[in-house]
Length: 240
Image (tube, rainbow, N blue to C red; front, side):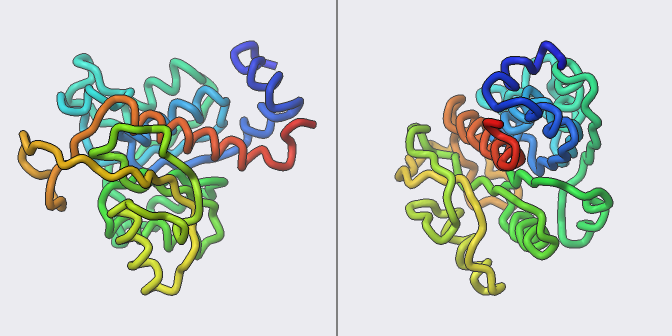
């Protein structure tokens, strides 16, 4: 047993760390939410991680993204995340895709089999295709809904998409998946009424408006998602 994971084994049971060391999880989107998902997975001893994100770190990421510092500005997010993982869990096998996931290139991302997918993608079209693809291939997936323009992390919850309310992104995803014959998928969302932000920056490509954010809501969302995924992977061995 490696000492860095001994406290995890004490809590989750004998054999838990061993099982996690054989798990392969893909994280699509390494931003405010996804970066913290990766942090949990690395510190839990996940043996293989696939990281997908086409963006580079920029100054506006520093307020909420765990990989964003003044020293990482301009670097590919997946490369920064991979280096951080290596400093935490050197034995982790890491695959990086510094590119956007889309329906036109999806097969590149599914060469390997995943035990779980964390969907932290922002763009609706890409998110819909990833969810549909995962469900079609019987790969468990947990999808982040909107965390921007919100301040209360205590309202975050993980539930079925059909039970969401008060989240604009969840409403769109629910409608579009229903049109594709999909009623159920697991999501993290918040029913908190979003604040209307002051628009101080140009809109991101593909967005009607750029959401505001804080340090604590996306991070809490990512920590919750990471913890949920670890526990789902361990359902057959926890507490034994």
